[in-house]
Amino acid sequence: QVQLVESGGGLVQAGGFLRLSCVASGRTFSTYTMGWFRQAPGKEREFVTAVRGSGEIRYYAGSVKGRFTVSRDNAKSTVDLQMNSLKPEDTAVYYCAAKKNSYSGYDRPGLYEYWGQGTQVTVSS
Image 1 (cartoon, rainbow, N blue to C red):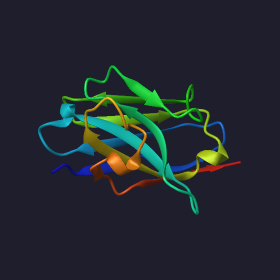
Image 2 (image 1 turned 180 degrees about the vertical axis):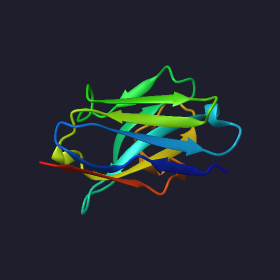
Image 3 (image 1 turned 180 degrees about the horizontal axis):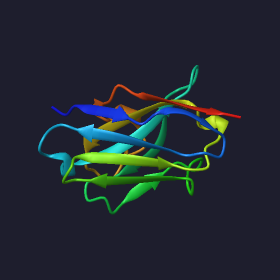
């Protein structure tokens, strides 16, 4: 069982930045691919980014590539999401999620086994 707790959301103006953090319980953190997803009101949950267990392989949605950076610290069981150049369309609840390492499915929310409670990010224009 893995428990995930996100923090760091808030209100920011367009062009600003935020850093989200997710801390995981358990002793096998490095065996999990960690993903960030987001869900805006009235929309489906969408993939933002993911990082495999070693931290060396990262994936990004096209809408955030070049603006967002994901990183993890396996010693601390944390995964962070640095969000720069934020846009109003980035407004959503952001979720941290975990799935066992594999070579596919990193962008499919249905394959993630564990989820955090979510943290709200609001970008004003």
